[in-house]
Image (tube, helix red, strand yellow):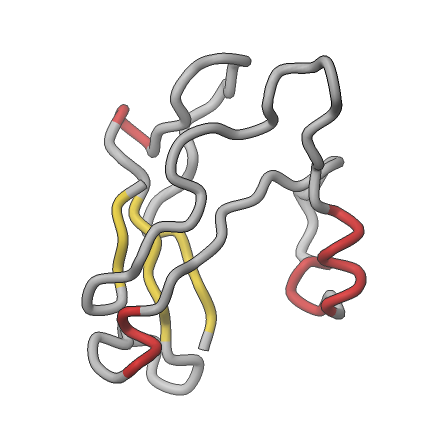
Length: 102
């Protein structure tokens, strides 16, 4: 299973502004079955909490598809003391039938 945004993020992303999907719509995140490509809409996983994080660097390539847990952790942008938070809002939303609106 994997988590996947249902649309692209609208750019540019500006400091202090809400992150939206294409067309100014809310971002939707879904839990996808790797074998079927369908949304996992039942079972424990379909109602799990997910953690939203910001990643550092230029991530335009597909190398992220093969990251180890350690590589992923090293790319997380952490809040810095005296600076504005990297992300704000509900950063641990719960899936509802495998999907959540951010």
